[in-house]
Each structure stands twice: as C-alpha cells, then as structure tokens.
Length: 145
Image 1 (cartoon, one colour):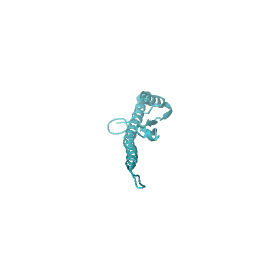
Image 2 (cartoon, helix red, strand yellow; image 1 turned 45 degrees about the vertical axis):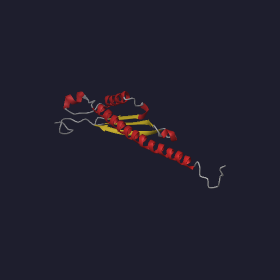
Image 3 (tube, helix red, strand yellow; image 1 turned 90 degrees about the horizontal axis):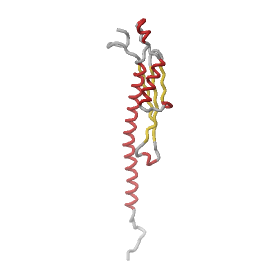
Image 4 (spheres, one colour; image 1 turned 90 degrees about the vertical axis):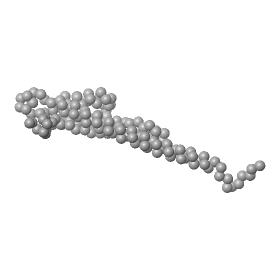
C-alpha cells in the first residue's frame, strides 16, 4: 500500500501543461489575429484610396472644355466613391466621403472579426483608414501642360 505524504507532487505536471497550453493559444491568437489586423488595415487603406481616385476622375467636363480648368464635380465624385465602396460591401454607416472642386477625401471604418482571440472574449477590432485624391493632368505635374 502506498502512503501519501505532505510532499506528494503528483498532478502538478498536469496543471503546468494546461496553463502552458492556454498561454500558447493566446500567443498564437496574437500572431494570427495580428496578421489579420495588418491585412485588414492594408485592405481598407487600399480601398479608400481607390475610392478617392474613382471620385477624383469625375471632373466637370464643360468647365474643362470652356477654359481648360480641371475641377471635380463634387456630387458625381461622392457618388462614384460610394459606388466603389458599396461594390466591396462596406457598410454605408462606416463610410464618410467629402468632395469639393479640388479634392476627394474618403474615410471608412470596419469591424474585423478575430480568429483565435475570440477564445478569450476578444471578438473583433476596429480598422479605420483615410484616403485622398485630386485630379492630375499631364505627365509632368498636376497643372495643365
């Protein structure tokens, strides 16, 4: 018959393994979800910049033909940028578009879901990006050639 003493340490390895596994899962979550965060930020930044460029293409053709001045049509620019982001499934509530005759600015915010950090109740994070564009004419600069 085995006698138990006060110095019996059976089962302590199990506690260590369980605690170590939890720590490894959290670290893996930071790596995986950190990668998702970087990817989401790049994607949103690219999309808002592309939307701003789509808006900046909407120029006032009549003004250009009459006196050679390149001006953006603000209403058409806002609509073009909104269409671009809507085609990429951005929620309208998370998109802000401003446009005037000289430039277009776009801001978008999304919620990116986590993959592993949801195990510790961190279910999503917010990604916000801004982009601007203005019309450029010619190959040497932004003024008329």
